[in-house]
Amino acid sequence: MSQNNNKLKGVDFDAVVVGAGFGGLYSVHKLRDELGLSVQAYDNGSDVGGTWYWNRYPGALSDTESYLYRLSFDKELLDEGDWKHNYLTQPEILSYLNRVADKFDLRRSYQFNTKVTATHFNEEGNYWEVTTDKGETVTAKFLITGLGLLSATNTPNFKGIETFEGVQYHTARWPEEGVDLKGKRVGIIGTGSTGVQVIIAIAPEVEHLTVFQRTPQYTVPIGLREQTDAEKAEIKANYDKIWEEVRASAVAFGLKESTIPAVSVSEAERERVFEEAWNTGGGFRFMFETFSDIATNLESNDAAANFIRKKIQEIVKDPETARKLTPTGLYAKRPLCDNGYYNTYNRDNVTLVSVKDTPIEEITAKGIRTTDGEYELDVIIYATGFDAVDGNYTKIDMRGRNGITMNEKWADGPTGYLGMMNPDFPNHFMILGPNGPFTNLPPSIEAQVEWISDTVNYMVENEISTIEPTQEALDEWLATCQEISDQTLFSKGDSWIFGANIPGKKHTVLFYLGGLGNFRKALEETGFEGVIFDRTMANVE
Ligand code: FAD
Ligand code: NA7
Image (cartoon, rainbow, N blue to C red; front, side, top):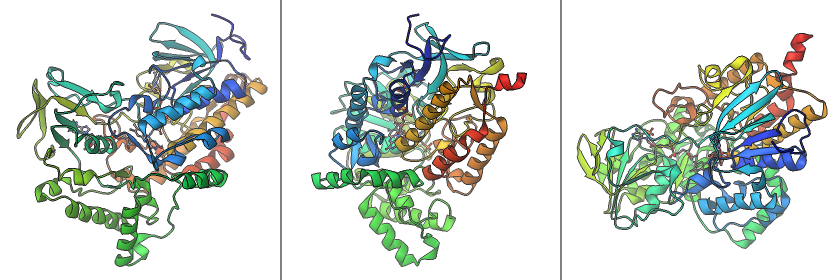
């Protein structure tokens, strides 16, 4: 192994970073460029981008507004930053992350097309042995994993899936060269955020689109529009204040979080506020800027849900299609927004199949067979989501102290003290691991990466060998996450936020729903209280 200008002795590298999305890239910059550590980084993609490297499906768009879906730490990047609309397309975000990588020359620390397959903690030397699918093992004092929370794909195990003679893709494995859908009979399974975006984007292009919907979705207009140079200049002139407010806010989406409960106003006032939000656009705006209790109070939730249901009835011309599209349950998932979803069903070349009414029996050589008959297709698109949060972790052979595996540790569900650490896994920091914040994510990623970097620096300067959380601190954090979750209606809606979308996966609280401001306070005020440094030395004493 070549010499890597390590600060620490006895290891190949000071730190290994896994992932080249927002989290991994920022970690490499902090540890390598600011702390002067030697860093080896990996990603199984062929270049940087993470989520935005993989999700190249037609219509892929952020639902965070353009000016806030970025890292805030570098003023120059913020000032140079350009965007066309108030939301970002996948190519725009990928190009932004490439600019981040270029500016700090981050690629030179990465080995791409390389999957990390095992991470074993060596207790004698207090370091990690990291093994890749290329058969290499390197050692490092610190392990930082930014494996992505919506990254491990979920393709349901449909009977006959391998027999289909056309082409089939999961949206998060969309080929870089694109797929020619012109004149094709296309079927899409899934109507979550991704499905909604794809359906709108490809309906005008394909010969016929058949949508296989399981659970109908509440979605509101996104309000996509061009932003003028004057608007962008105004944002840039006020960025310091904007970021300060975002960091102190709950959802970190740059909106004015309402403090008025819907139950405190008249029905007419509710309608007025919902109508205004519908016309402004934005999923998080509709849920959190209208009233303060949509996500926590049944009556308020139902008022918002009813408003959307009425809109569906107004927009969709065919009553049977409108019936199938109309959700009946709680409005309590990550709030969706779209650029003309319900209206797409007024097109002659779009058919909606409710697989709740007529379930999918199998994928055949020619298409999809439901209990209602066979739909012949040239292309099948799986917009079936992700094994969220821990999906990429459980695939790696992770072993901590005494050879305990992460899967054993997570037998009752995945966990993370402050979304970052677990007992018995010293010096292993996860970015957006289980029980991390549920927000617009770049500002939460920044909060975690900065805490990790400060902690690593403190340890290097004070010659501390290991850090890990105590079991009590983890339990307390989990109880806090549970308590907050219990106060919301999200915990009662089945979605990936609780692992409910994967058959057989335990339903657990995967997020801290207390907001970014409170999360940052927890990091600052109690972060070090819950950890133990040099555990083995403490034991000896
Ligand atoms: P990722 O960007 O997911 O990067 C993780 C990387 O780690 C991937 O490249 C992966 O291949 C790699 N990796 C994983 N395991 C291994 C391994 N074993 N070995 C090597 N490499 C590995 N969030 C928002 O806040 N706003 C939005 O508008 C928004 N829109 C989204 C739209 C889509 C379609 C999706 C899928 C997600 C969206 N998200 C959004 C969430 C988004 O994932 C985060 O905002 C952010 O990009 C996560 O960055 P990350 O660095 O943590 O992880
Ligand atoms: P989601 O939100 O998990 O949506 C997945 C969709 O796929 C949803 O409509 C599911 O129906 C459907 N699905 C999943 N499995 C099946 C099976 N077996 N049969 C039929 N339909 C199925 O994933 P997305 O990619 O859309 O969005 C995830 C996040 O990424 C999103 O919030 C953004 O932040 C980006 P269900 O609702 O489970 O009945």
